[in-house]
Length: 240
Image 1 (cartoon, rainbow, N blue to C red):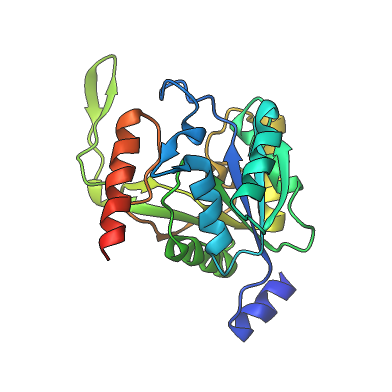
Image 2 (tube, one colour):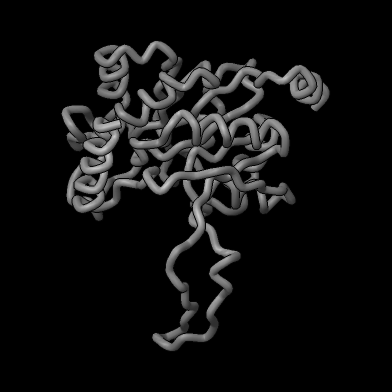
């Protein structure tokens, strides 16, 4: 923590690495969503390029399905992902994949951003805000306010209506000081392997999560309709 504190006083980020998790099966998409074409570029490559272009990030690691490791390495070369330092096989759960990626980041990394490969439209602003927040507060979660009223139900009957003002939709990259996320994911793999959110793994060991600014455009590709939305967002960005 001393090194982090010293660099914070100097107003600069320490070495930050990104882990892109690309181990999902895409069952709801009806195919490999990470290799789906998004305006001429595979979804996963767009996620990789976002971190390649982010000045605050110095290294990128991809945790992919074992059968896709060589393909992802080839894509990294094809699209000039110079920050790509490793492509590693993921595990049988998201938590194991995240841990495999985290353990493969360069040892000098003091901050680690973990990102869903299926969020190809993440911006440098969202990435940088999350890293700075993690730098200052240990762990950061990009999020946007929930717009709809949310109901809690059991067996089809509403039991509770939470205050919408207190609800936020979680996004990625979720960013952490490196020692914290390594400890949290190691504990989760041993004691709660079904944890589906990296911040939750940190919460389980008593860590505090601070929100950073997300973006309505930072959508996750889950269904073919999401891909259509992503194409529309890219079209609007071209007009700016």
